[in-house]
Structure formats: structure tokens, C-alpha cells
Image 1 (cartoon, rainbow, N blue to C red):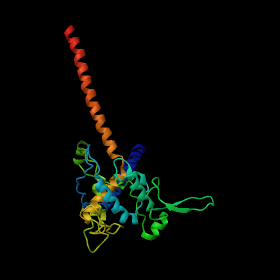
Image 2 (cartoon, helix red, strand yellow):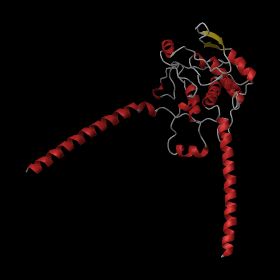
Image 3 (cartoon, rainbow, N blue to C red):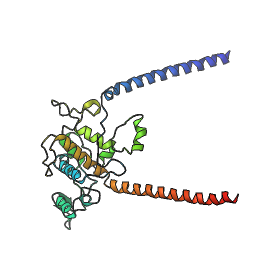
Image 4 (cartoon, rainbow, N blue to C red):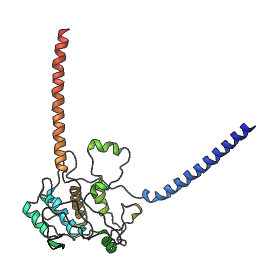
Length: 285
């Protein structure tokens, strides 16, 4: 009798626990469904064509130079680029500036340095060894000026991405598609499609973004005759930020290609050696 009573109590406890778990899961699923409602109408960024796509892709130096101008004249008012040094502008695989040109660009910036012999901080022109300075002295100043801390753009092209879903995520490694981040940046910059709301963006969940529309036609003057349109600016600065995130991309691809060639030749030699050795073995039989 006691055994039956104990078993009944255990069964009752299990039923109550299962009911509570099911209720909790139901509420959680409902909450997740409610939170994801705003995601259903957020389109995926369309895939763009980039010069640096593929195993043999390279940066377009003219595009990187234009993108630098867009960053300096527009983005640098709020966003830092603290991991990029001025010397990188003259490095191989970059925008293609000479060392003298990179020095001239660095000298246009004022860098706070010190302390000096008197123990005081001082300002000086930038040098090749310096990094792009932040537009704000600290995060508190940025928050006070903009009500939010703008992200650093040094690796933004690698830090931001989106899911391509099945079966595309299986195909991407085969076709060497690694430009999810830069596609996302371009879509974000061109997604301000509501003229009456400068903070409405098509590619942001909920369609609300703290950054008001940053680009418009004619903002930056190009000296190479390229179209001075919002879409061109967005494409150029997105490519520049891709380079900033991976300035050694061309070296990596070059090394990868050389390794593949080496492995192919090595495999061919192994096959020929194997045929020669086993040919003698078969001939002996």
C-alpha cells in the first residue's frame, strides 16, 4: 500500500513537473516567436561583385583610395579606425600610396603624444608609425555627443555578417565566398529607403538604427571621374573597410595558391613513384 502511494506521489510530481516544463517551453517559444517577428521582414543582403572575390582576387587600388576619402570625409566624424596605421597605406596589397604620400596623409592629423621632459602631453603632426586617431577622446565623450558609442571600423567587415541558410552555407566554402561582411556593410549603407525617416534601414532587424543616413549624392568629390553617388560611395568605403579588416588578404591568397600548386605537383610525383615501384613488384611476379 505504501509502495503504491509512493509511486502515485512520484507520478504526480513527474506530471506536475512535465506540465510546468511544457508551459515554460511554450512561453519561451512564444516569446522567441514574438521577438523574431521583426526578423521575418528583414531581407538578406544581396550578394555583390567584388574585385577581391575568389582565390585569385585582388583589391582595386583606385577603389581603396576612393574609400579612404569617404571614410576621412564622412565616417571619421564619428567612427575610429584604431587598428590601421598610416604606414599600412603604403604597404603591399593596400591602396598603393607611396611612402611620401602616406607621410603626407599622416601629417594632416594631429596626434596627442607625451609626456615630454616637463611631464606634459603635447600635440604633433602624425607619423607613419601612428594609427588613425579617434574622433573622440574617450567613450564617455562619444556617448555624450552621439547618445551612443559608435563602433570602431577596423574589423567591422569581419565582425558583421549574416546567415545565408541551407544549402548556400554548404556551397560557400566550395565557391570561396567569404564576402558576407562587406556585402552586409554595402546593404546597410544603401538600406535607408525611407526619405521621411533618416534612421529607418531595410537591413536592420526592426528597421531602426542609431546612425542616421550617412551618405548622399555629391558628398565626396572624386578626382578620378568615378560617379559621385551614394551607391558608389557605399561600395568604395565598404571595400576600403574590407581591406582595413584584412590588409594581408592578397598575401594570404597568394600563399594559399602556391601551397595548392605545391601539393598538386607533390601528389603527381608521389603517384609516379608509386607506379614505378609497384611496376617492378608486379614484374617480379
